[in-house]
Amino acid sequence: MWHKLPAFPEPLRAVLSRLPHYPPSAAFATLLTLQLAEHISVAALPELADKKIKLRIQDVGVTLLFQAGPDGFFACSNGEADLTITATAQDFLSLALRREDPDTLFFSRRLLMEGDTELGLLLKNTLDGMGNQAFEPKHPTFLAIINALKLQIFQKHLRPSLHASQRDRNLI
Image 1 (tube, one colour):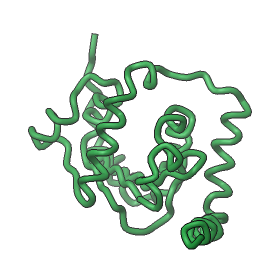
Image 2: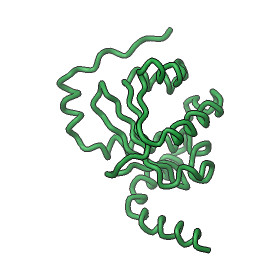
Image 3: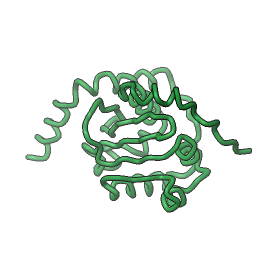
Image 4: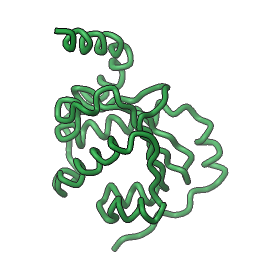
């Protein structure tokens, strides 16, 4: 049976909305890496290169900013997003559990998309095409967890050299 999430307390939302978005973004990017990196990455979808995605959970007051890299997802500390998706926690959970169709939420104005809508459609179609088994909870190994966490820690420092090496490859 499907239950709705309880209403998020306004005082807590007010506090969360003032906190830095990097820590929850890093936690979310780590979870995405562990769950979906084999399906969605710059290697699998080159169109994701250098694209920042922002998820705005409006009723919770949390904003997540991240991007895909060659080995998974990593949090971004700042910058403008190429794509911003806004919804409530309940609607994001419904999407993640595949209980709601993104088109239904979009056309009922419960899911808002701003920026690069072509990127949004690419992500939607990729997620739709993955099948339900890609969304079943995984039980990652300790090494996989450590590697996903290292991506969060070191990607921030390696990003300028990563972009330089990508530019160098494009010049050849």
